[in-house]
Length: 459
Image 1 (cartoon, rainbow, N blue to C red):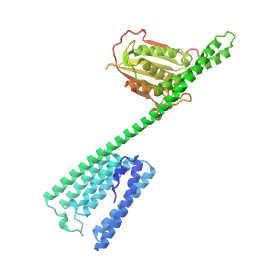
Image 2: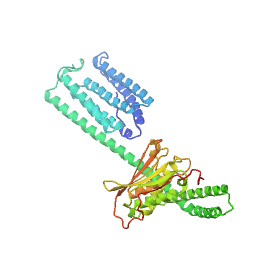
Image 3: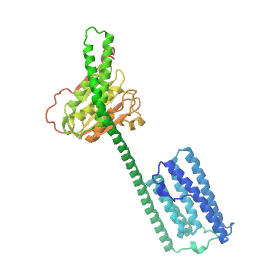
Image 4: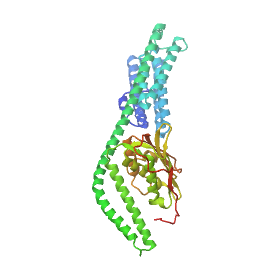
């Protein structure tokens, strides 16, 4: 019969919906074969007339179940509309059980327990939603069958004893109340348990992922600690030597351009080492009152005089003159710098990066960094803050991971507004504004740089 539910503890939360549906379809076929063998053996042993109504109806129900299992398998093979398939299975199972209840005693039939088993099946497939569909459909079908038999709209099976189906009104009410109540309780318990199991499974998966990430970060920390000193020393020597070489008057313009390239790549390597160390060896933030508006303007000034922002990308600040937040100043500076650097790297020639610090009406401070680059699609957004994930041909994918770590440790909330091809805006809720211990050294509300002549300073 359809609606088989043995082995449900192994099905609940055992994997994606297609896997659970496939397992349930297989179990349904096994159960139907066993039921067919059992019915056949029973009728052969008791000498029932195979041409009577009940044996023919039972055989029709088994054929119906076999046909449904085949249809389910075909739809499952297509891989589309699986939630609708799950709902259809639940509804058709309850229809099948209603036929079995009718053939085995009507209102007082022990087969009414199969309604509850279908609630368990529904819970295993789609959680509380599936259990609710099973309970509502089973209850309505059972009440409808009971009313039809009580009012004489549906005659009992002709080969069954009539006294089994002739019950007093009090007995009918008793069976109705008990069976419907049991159905509701089973549905609630099964649905709640299934949702709880799925939530627990999700938490376990998340904890496992976090443990794996922590292990990777620990390994990276050991590697970064060993390499940072070894890399930075030669980088410092290279940067100092190139600076001295660039100041030589006999250098040609081509030589100076090559020196600029070496300087730029040296800074990029130094930034990469810094990001690796910050990501792998985090420290607990030392919270204090920090003027985030002043800090953001200072970093905009710095970004406007370094890297690509010198030549073809504008970096501009718009927002509050001064506003305080509670944060670790050095880590907040790293967060803002990484967001600005990421936006500049994502921008094309002639585009602009805008940094804003806004005090909202609810007295919460919001930092946003907007670029007009290629944007971020939905799939990339899910992994945007993962370490070593990057959408660019250059870069190690560490900067935004550092941003996320700092934000999490400060309990800041980061959101990303973006669509592919239309740029991106990173928003950071920095919490409620706090008083500043000293006035901001800045007084302008807008600081920035416009792109210089594209031919100037390029390297």
